[in-house]
Length: 152
Image 1 (tube, rainbow, N blue to C red):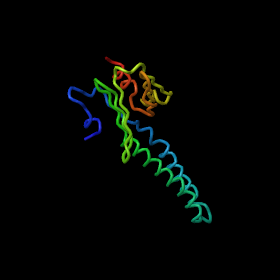
Image 2: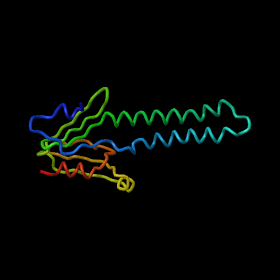
Image 3: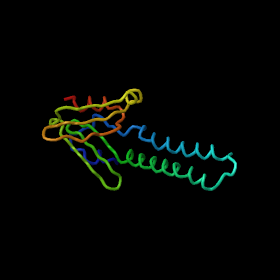
Image 4: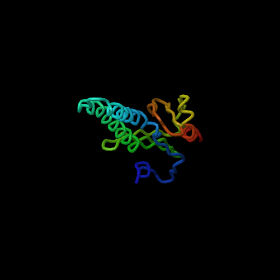
């Protein structure tokens, strides 16, 4: 059972759910691919040394670490808009949650790059009375989430 489902109050229903977009894996995949390219390019070279394999292994390990970190971030992040509040939870082992009543939302800012518009991701900043939820980065389909937040 997800965190959002556990904290729903009686009469509260989920209007929209969001997650981190798959593009968060991109940096890790590119570094991993660079490691493979280095290894393949150096392999036929005369005098292939274990040092060359180590040089190729470093970006490979770094790429795998970046992919694992992105997977944990995606696994541990829940964003939901209910008829009463906005719920944002991050973290797998340690948990950080932020909730804001929809009545306190003054504005919702969506920031999308050209790539974000083409691939369907963006950043959301919720501004409310007193304070807001920090920027939530790389959200899949941010316009739907914004519409759910601003709909009364």
